Amino acid sequence: MEELVSLAKRRGFIFQSSDIYGGLQGVYDYGPLGVELKNNLKAAWWRAMVYERDDVEGLDAAILTNPLTLKYSGHEATFTDPLVDCRNCKSRWRADHLEGNTCPGCGSGDLTEPRPFNLMFKTQLGPVDDGGSFAYLRPETAQAIFTNFKNVMDSTSPKLPFGIAQIGKAFRNEITPRNFIFRVREFEQMELEFFVAPGEDEQWHDTWVAERLKWWGQQGVNENNLELYHVPADELAHYSKATVDVMYRFPHGLEELEGIANRTDFDLGSHSKNQDDLNLHSAVTPNKESNARLAVQNLETKSWVVPFVIEPSAGVDRGVLAVMNEAYRVETLENGSERTVMAFKPHLAPIKVAILPLKRNHEGIVAKAKGLKRELQALGLGRILYEDTGNIGKGYRRHDEVGTPMCVTVDFQTIEEDDTVTVRDRDTMDQERIACADLAAYVRLVSDI
Ligand code: ATP
Image (cartoon, rainbow, N blue to C red; front, top):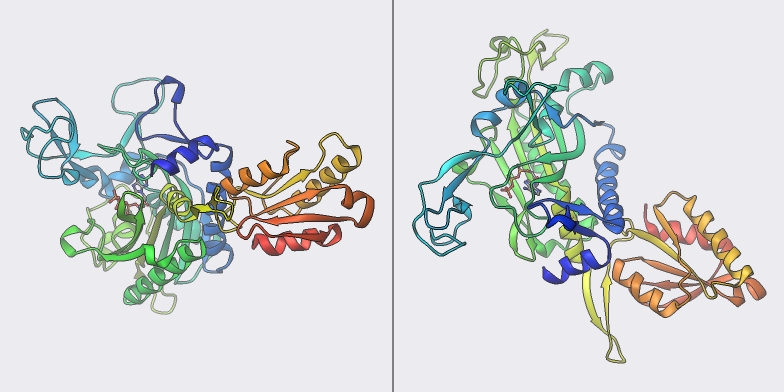
């Protein structure tokens, strides 16, 4: 983990937030390469979950959330972790993360009994801080999908089964944030709520577990580092009939990367009016405040059905950590020297192609290299970098370390002889001459987007 954290900072992937003021615990910023990697991972998810299907619509809802939403979702009452205080050194810890019931700070065994600590952040709304007008920062993106269920239904007229997908920030006041970007207080989620007819839920749950495993494989996560954990009944969240966690072998241990839950009809039922007419399977809090019936009507029988929900919910930051961990390798070369390579899948690589002019002050070479940069950038594959540091060998090493799949060198042969460039492959380090006229097609093929 230390090597990854150090590379992440040195090369501009991830920084401690508010670094110059000593940081803010459990909060990180993504730097120039991190933002590209994270955007590419989110784009890959969106492509698979929305564009490549015709039964899923997208949503981008607000972070500030009406307290009623989180009252009826059950979060106000139950979204807690068990907190213990150390009477000796006055520190606080999450009870289920303690080893051996002693304080990790001072080693004392003088701990209080665990008490529930609600993880939601509250923030004041408007100019008067009377304690009454506040909103929550959403602790998951899912709830806004449920509260927008009728809006999306009315505007897109889908038929069951169908889904609503969303990527966005979520906030949890974790008692002990730790392990770099694994457990943080501000993070992003990629969540799909997939609505199915009751009775078809178990089959769809299996389907989504298989789909999601396949997708992580496509992001370069080795299947040997993934394990499924069938959450036992006594550990299930209040809304869940069954949950399968996709566990990944992170540098600090095997932990949850994504949770895939069968949320039954709990959420739509909880947020719905006229609950008594809906034949709900789950036990919900009576709701007199919602103004919408969150159900679909069978046009022949006229009866209302509340769909069951299958929810694949993945953490973006945990995903970034997993793909960085998978990509990281240190190789010993034939001459005994070492090279560090981030072998990202090309579609995730922060920089797709680096264009290196052999001479940074040769007009013809520079003009050709800049022209190629413009041509490749226009393909819309992501960032194409023109870089004129002049030392090609060092450029190759730097781009190995940040995971650039291809370096293109423009030299005298390019402009004086045959209009070809050297394309150097990150993984094999092989170099081949490719005609400039074929370069765009080549880059598009290798980038796999
Ligand atoms: P954990 O048990 O690790 O706290 P969780 O079961 O509470 O996670 P979910 O509520 O299922 O997590 O959230 C879905 C996904 O959101 C998780 O699989 C994870 O990838 C991500 N996630 C949740 N909490 C955090 C966090 N504090 N920091 C980073 N990612 C998180």
